[in-house]
Length: 338
Image (cartoon, rainbow, N blue to C red; front, side):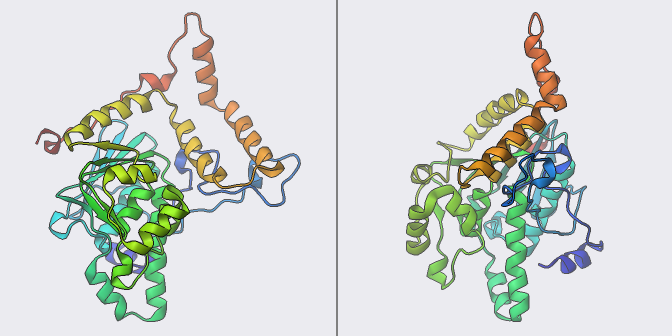
């Protein structure tokens, strides 16, 4: 769905997106690369940024028929709510997810995000109706549709909060892509991860940069070309999954564990560290990269968080920096008590 079409559907005008680092002021823009012509005395302006593409920004999304969006204290939960459609990536699902993440860019109080789904399937990938519609599109419309989905994935990857996928069931195609742009993946043991596009005469093109980054070239060729359906334990060996649990009940234990861990971490530093990983990944270790990373360290050393962290460490007796005293709690909803 193009930006113009989304604007018409929402009766809004397209607005530029929040900055890649959100208002958390992350020191490195998402997917930034060291400048090919570095200044020997680098400054922040030397970084060549790759901003998430423009879309209709929705800074106050509260949920839809396709996505439930819950806000707690320092925590957000995004739940796909179309189990009767296996939570496929329909235009409405993608738009709802994009709106949820737009809201997160504006919510500097949120420190961690949990993404999961209702039903037996986490996400079935592309909507069959969407493929049928694509056959009737012009070449330009077909291209724009693919660009829009690629832009959506990039935007999710650039979200400044730490995003955890709680994979409750199997995922296919675009669902695997959605998992790949999350920062951590916890899956039930029975979940399978399938890239079956070649069985339908297509390829996993727009998701490929993110999937390959997670599982590597050799594993990607195997899954892309054979359409195998590895279980979560095998997907963990590949690098797609970080942790495997026996049942969804264990998700709650992991939520609380990760919330406790994130409470110990300075929010701006988390956003900056996440962006730093994406900026440095796969770059050659050379003078340019060393100057880039040195300048990032110099900037964060001068930040208010660094000042507070060092002051707490040096205090006698040692004290707690302010972010460790800020509450983090799950949203209280009827869903939590089911």
